[in-house]
Amino acid sequence: MRSSHPRSAAVAALVATALATGLLAGSADAAEGAVSADPIRIHDIQGTTRISPLNGKQVTDVEGIVTGVRTYGSRGFWIQDPDADDNDATSEGVFVFTNAVPTVAVGDAVKVSGTVGEYIPGGLTSGNQSVTQISKPTVTVVSSGNALPEATAINEYTVPAEYAPAGDPAASGSINGLTLEPARYALDHYESLEGMNVKIGTSRVVGATDPYAELWVTVKGWENTAKRGGTVYGSYESQNTGRLQIQQLAPLAQQPFPVANVGDRLTGTTEGPLDFNQFGGYTLVARTLGTVKAGTLAPEKTKPQAEQELAVATYNVENLDPTDPQEKFDALAKAVVENLASPDVLALEEIQDDNGAKNDGTVSAEQTLAKFTAAISAAGGPAYQWRTVNPEDKKDGGEPGGNIRQVFLFNPARVSFTERAPGDAVTATGVTKVNGKAALSHSPGRVDPANPAWADSRKPLAGEFVFRGKTVFVIANHFGSKGGDEGLTSHHQPPVRSSEAKRLQQAQAVNGFVKQILAEDKNANVLVLGDINDFEFSATTDALADGGALYPAIKSLPKAERYSYVYQGNAQVLDQILTSPAIKKFTYDSVHINAEFSAQNSDHDPQVLRFRP
Image (cartoon, rainbow, N blue to C red; front, top):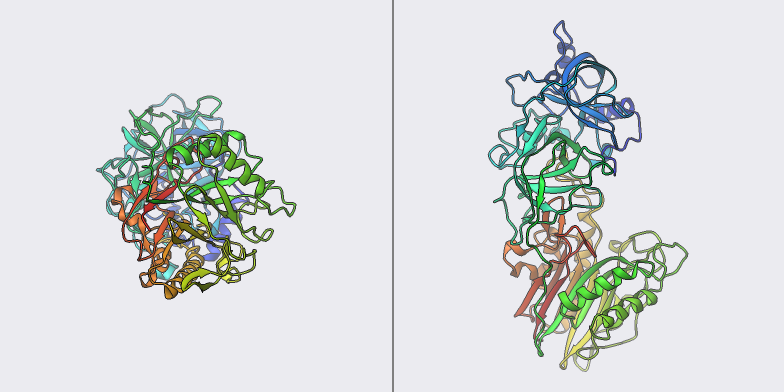
């Protein structure tokens, strides 16, 4: 199982660096004041902020009851003081990092001596909050078999509606130095329980079991509920406070982790220490895990297009290459035929070259596409043809050696492709006129490939199609990823979303190209689609739509149905289809076949738009 606390440096070095940057500024006065004749208690270590007032100090004979033991990943155990103080801001639990497999057992009463530190999962640059812990411990077991401190309930009544305080401008937007207000802010509430024995009751699953044996629930069943059972992330201010990650303490070899889909229920009581990790923030590491009760969620099937309707779809097929098992090709193909009703035009993202991640200069994807289209035909679908532009080797980002690119599949029995001086990786397609109508100078061609916005990123693929005598321009995209962005639980509030700058530039480039087409023909049928890697309410989407050039068609759906991806329990929009003003009437469908399920053929849900040109 993935370690929730990978350690690349000594704790002391990390603390020193953190203090030097000012991110983990503890109070020396508070630390000195706490060193007195009175024994140090866990709530003295935790203090009333995210950073221990005893950070970097040695403590002796800290007493507590062992509430959880972790023998894998970040090995150690949690202790809790059964004699709580009267301050809700101070946690009564703390993690003891042993490095080696702990020798204590749940229910042991122990005395721990060691160094108090603040460990940052993911490192200083991650933006993650820190975990207060005791390291290099000397442990004395006083007695065994003791009753555990009563678990603190986390539920819709205890978790506040407001997510986080605003960060301190004087501390670069950090909330580390702010006094916790657990009755006001959800993040403060969870932080005030860091390391403590907590429990949840029956809760709805909002993030399916992933390959790392974790799932997400919500303790607020009513919060931004998606139509199919998830929780919708509908704005930067609706972080969904009731989401909580669930892992288990038992090693997988000893106890398999349950398989759950969105909409299932984790029933009964789930109880254990509250941890914080880099892959989701606050996590209930279950000592006692509830039982998954399966729901009725099934993959969706979109409505077939009518004879006079053009169906255009986008699907990120997640690094598809010929070395993938035939089962993946068959499953994706079946989805195209049965769930997407064999769209007339299908834009694919993440088609890899003919040998996948092997980094040998190969850029052609002919074998990948031949294998995929053959699988579609075998599944009863049309004999799709394809058009693409091969990228330059190692210039478009993605998995090293994979050379991902966008590809058009089209059904020649329903639509024709206008091939016009096909472009190459470095040649920009332009807008011209042919017979008095707007046309592409290169079809297929790449949009503005020399623009720095596309450095180490996929360049847009433009193509010209004809359906029932009408020209339709389609621009397939795969914008830059969100890699490098801070999580919602960052100590910076609001979190730093550094990746947005590049996508904003990419959106501006595509918007400018669409405006060139519309300048030649204001009634042109233009569709911009693909993995935009950004929300329908984002600055990226606003830039794509600038000047009324495009409309984000997913906004035509009710808010409870606007999502194509589920991340950390938040159902959100990454994949989009946008329409030019001439496309006034259409039917839009986000076809939920992957994102809500533990068993996935891709982590994205495809999108389909049907209209009459």
